[in-house]
Image (cartoon, rainbow, N blue to C red; front, top):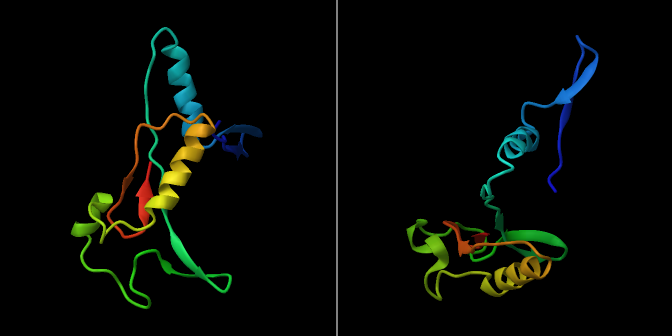
Length: 117
């Protein structure tokens, strides 16, 4: 379940859904569509970092102290020289499935060490 956010309307002295509380507005739509089976998706992106001496060093796959080349070759991590952190992503994906999350797929993103599901 996603968290909801609320704001205080000081003029009315009431609490109301914050204008960024999309869960509240989505719930209203889902209630109106309860006779249907609506689908919607959420995309979660994350970046893996290397760690050294308890501090983040650099994004995984980046040259230390530098930047990777143009992002084109990294998109979807196609190829052994552009795929960084695949075993970690696979373990994360499997943990999500084991926890009962329905995930349609996953892929490497445009930056080395960046993934999404």
